[in-house]
Each structure stands twice: as C-alpha cells, then as structure tokens.
Amino acid sequence: MIGHNLRVVGQIGKTDFSAIDQKARQAPAHLDKDLSSLTAYLTEDAAGELGKVRAVYVWIITHIAYDYPAAKRNKRSNHSIQDILDRRKALCFGYAQLFQEMCRLSNIPAYVVNGYAREVEEPAPSLDVPNHSWNAALVDGKWLLFDPTWGQGTTSGANPRYTLENDPFFVARPDKLILSHLPGNPMWQMLPNPLSADAFMSPASTLEHHLSRIDSTYSYADSLQFFQQLSTDRQRLHEAEQTFRSFPSESNRVQFGHALFDYAGILADTAELLQNNAPPQKLRQLNAGVISLCRKAQQHLTNLYPWQQELFINALINQAVLLYNQQDELEIEAQTAGKEALSLLHEALATAETGEPSFFKQMARQRCMQYIQVIE
Image (cartoon, rainbow, N blue to C red; front, side, top):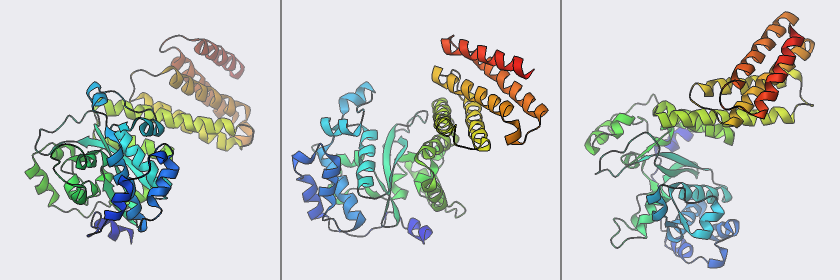
C-alpha cells in the first residue's frame, strides 16, 4: 500500500554499499562524457533500485565539484547536463538535475525539489527566493529524499562532519532533513504534519517540538500520486503555484506568473498543431485555456515580455475569429457569438496598447479593427 510505504520513508536499514561505492569512485574516465553509457556501467551490477541510486549518488558526489566561484558571483554555473559533465562542476540545481537524469536513465522516477536551505545552527535565511535544490525519488515503491550537493561534503574538506558510510543526505530522514531543508512545495516534506515557513524560521528546538505533533489529516501520499500523473509541463506549473501559495514573496509571485505564461504557450502550440484537424469545440477549449492562463498571469506580473503580450493578443484574436466564423459548428447563437467576439477583440486592442510599440502590435490593431467592422 503506497500510504504505508510513504510513512516509513527513509527507513532502509543497514545495507553494505562498499562494492557499489568502490565501482562508482573508480568508474573509467572515458565514460564521463556519455551519461547513458556511464549510468549503464554504474548500475549494471547494482542490486535493486536502491543499489542503482547509490551508484549514481556516489559517482556524482565524488566526481562533480561544487562551483564555489560561480556561487560567490551568484551566477548560473551550467547551461546543460553535458556542460556539468564537461566542466565537472555544478551548483545545487546542477547536482539535482544530474541526479534526476541518471535516475531516469535507470528507470527510476526522480524529481528536483526546489526550496530553502539553512544550517540548523545559523539564523534562518530569507524566504524570498528559493536558494537550494535537492531530490526525491521513488525507489522500490518508497519515496526517498537525497541531497547530492550537501552529500558532496562527505568527500571534500579536511575534516568532513560525516563520512560516505554515514551520510545523512543519502536517503535523508524527512523529520531530520526538514530542520535544514524546506521545500517550496509542502508535499516534498513527506511529513504527516507539514512545517510552515514561520516554524522553519524558528530555532531548532521549536522545529523539533512542531514535528512531535502529528496531523493525520494531511496525505502527502495522495499529493505525490496526483503530481506523478501530471504531464511534465503541468508539473512545472504546479510546483510554481504551490511554492507561491506557501511562500507568497514578490519573487515567487513573479515566477508563478511566468510559469502560467509558459504553460499557456504550450497550449497555444497544441492549438496551432491541431488547427486543421481538430473539431471547433476542441480548438475553442484550448484557446479559452490560453486566455484564462494569460489573464491569471497578468495578476502576478507588472510587465509582460513581448512574446507574452503577443501570445495573449493572438489567443484573443483567434478565439474571436473562431467564435464568429464557426457559430453553427459551435452551436452558439449569432448574437451571443458576436458579443463575445467583440469583447475579445477589444481586450486584444487594449493589450496591444500597453508596453513598448512594435510591428506585431501595429498589425494586431489593424486586424482587430477590421474584424470589429465586419462583426458590427
């Protein structure tokens, strides 16, 4: 039963990983640039999914160095997974991406978890912008947590606080990891009583008191199951929305707005591909989805990018034309279709008047005026 497995997340017992660890540490250098071949080599003799994840984890933390210069400059370190392999350096998001992809190549579902990290002994960080990334993976039917970035501390430094044999970030206990790692999306806490942002900002003793309380009304098992059933693009939007709802900072508000436009763009591309083959009702539904997402995004964004404005204007015009030209197929009365089409065209005109002028906006205004004259 999935709920039972999730309640014992992180409890794997004693396992001898010595042979897997040695193979991962000594992996041939010629495989480093081919992630598929490297992953196959690392996992070919590993026993079970946990053994495969261990091989991936150990290879990453022993072969990829943390890019401290990039971290100090607060700049992105890698442009792709191949870049991580070429440079042998990454920041936390790069570690998490690499872990996710190597798990995927091993047929193990894994996800990047974005959120906030702190040293338990130090003051809590600002919860404005997520500052860390780690991983969750479904291993042998159980959801487990990993942080290869912090696990890299087992292999670096003169006096590491822990060793690879006793690494708290390989299959991290949720009730321990939450003391230093707060996911943007609460479901990734994998706790029956999710920690709030205010509680996370508290001293460690307060956090532990909170964790001692049990609230069985929250089922993260259901949330994770629902999340898995979403498309990859829909998962990104879900993550942005849940992060904003949990941490309604200005930065997260903007990120949610952009995520809404990104998903609207995907729906618009789908509508364009189906333009000549889908029934009018389907196209209208897709266009309506694009328009709804764009309107919602506008509530979270002060300024739109040019491509976002163009996406919104195009969707409004396309929907207006579809309504007016296909009234019979859509089974809409002419008067109703005309009013709705005019409303959409006037909204497109108003949107075209905002922001910087462009050739696209000029042409869009002309199209709108022509359609308005025809309808009226």
